Image (cartoon, rainbow, N blue to C red):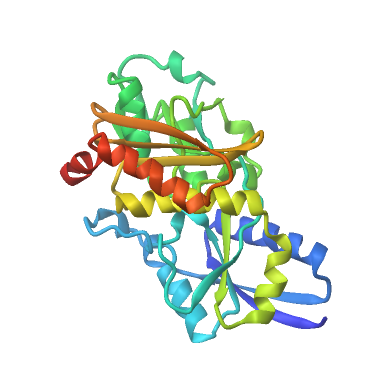
Length: 304
């Protein structure tokens, strides 16, 4: 078929890289379509956005979704972890491509592993989830706020401003920056953010033609994992200020999800794991959240 689709995305180097990689996958399976990429500046891209206490999950998506609803773009490509847990009325996630490694990684100046960091090491991260899990494992670390795009963050390590930083593996891989990784952090030490490593292709619910096209790069195991993780977060009413993590995946013939809720300082951390056989992924995610709530997760989150 011959058609031109307008694609909305953030204008960061990572967003543009993952958008171009996704479109290459689409070209392989749906030839004859041309794509126009429209970089869109979101509230989360503003320099002062992280200084507000009213942080929301749509910081990096709202403006893009509004243009999609208005018909000014045909599809939007997002990092899954940026998406609000509930899609705006009129929009759907048309496809979830195969997920990259969802784990976090450590980048250090001297290629040190986490266990080798000296006492009092200055570790950069802007994530409440990462901070809580780092401190739960090593309360001697100094966790310092870290912002900017991936290149900026890496320079803060190489310049000596930080001893180490923590980033998502998937972002570095998409930018071809894997050589900077000192250690891939085990999920035993640090569970990833909900949806980390996955992308979401969003379109209008009524655009059936686009939905039929996008589904050709759908990866069902990834979608099911994401459904479970997002259901877990919704049940907990989690937002980006809350130290909450989840990691779901198919393992052999079972479906496994692990989840975590912690206090910001990492002194209280509740973690659990659930294995299921054939149940609805969202039901599994909700059940794991209910287990954590029964163990006191609600109290921790209210305090946060």
